[in-house]
Length: 127
Image (cartoon, rainbow, N blue to C red; front, side, top):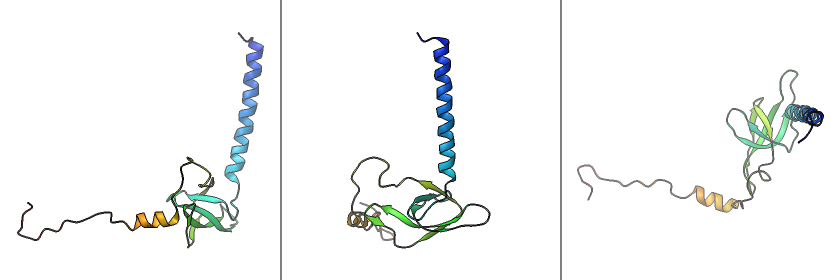
């Protein structure tokens, strides 16, 4: 069993590591985005790659993104998030290692018939 002095030293070391981690986290959260970073809207959860950062004298900068759809299917227009954004990790490198579908596969799924209607003429009954 460890002595009280050893345990106190361990606790002091862990507190020091926690303070360092909290300072690094605060610095990462307050970092301004750069062109090429990924950000997410805190209002709509849209996310994408930063294309333009517009600094403001007060408050966070306004950010413009190209929406991120999938690794092989980038967006083609831009979207202003204004000052409601947070920096996120690159979606292609985070998450599970499952293979992403190609752009053509995604588009083909979007064009599939999602709902089919069974038209019944007025005055008729189902069989």
